[in-house]
Amino acid sequence: MVNLIKKIAIYLLILLGISYGYQYLTGRSIVTLPRDIVEKLQEKEPSADSTNPKYYKKPNEDLLKN
Image (cartoon, rainbow, N blue to C red; front, side, top):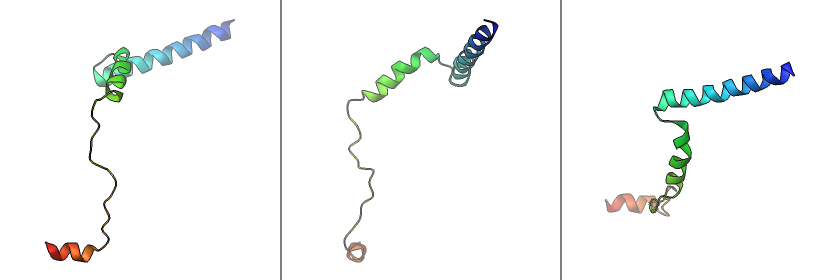
């Protein structure tokens, strides 16, 4: 029984430490984190620019045009 109480106390301390650490580092409560994640996921217009590199078939001709 004592071991169970020790385990519960350790897990509780870890959770409280994470919560306090997040609040200390960011200045916001950890309970607002799910709302921030949902807002980020539900952004209306994702960026239209492609992040893929653009390859040219004939790079020498493109350089000569400039």
